[in-house]
Amino acid sequence: MAALYVYGVVGRGFTWMFSGTMRRKFWSRPRKEKEPVVAETEEVKEGPALVCPPLRSRTYVPPEDLPSRVQSRIRELSGSSLPSNWQDISLEDCHMKFSLLAHIANDLGHAVPNSRLHQMRTVRDVLDFYNIPVQDRSKFDELNASGLPPNLKISWSY
Image (cartoon, rainbow, N blue to C red):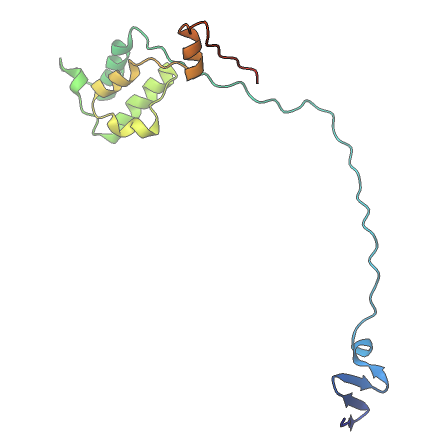
């Protein structure tokens, strides 16, 4: 094997030696041993546990005076007397539509969902939407209340 000697550096194969010392020992720093990491324990606060809020009831019963409420809101928004066919007033004006739906939703506690907003084209559409009662019951509750035959029972415990 050929040897190369230049200014105190000797090269033999893949190992380089500097004045008799291996390259790795010459160029690398001495390695420090890692100290074990001690995890500090924190005291756990014994406060009240997070409690889930009660489920929001989506039950809605339309009021009996719904047409008069909507008519008064439209009278406030339009500022003038209403025609006899006030239920056919168009809601093409976005500001009027938003104001009407926002006031009614605030008054009744029941809002038009986003997926149905495009269907509210006239005041009659708004009245039709708000005249439908909403029950917050599952299909199992409805089946149980409908009077099942004696051989069928719904048990909620597993």
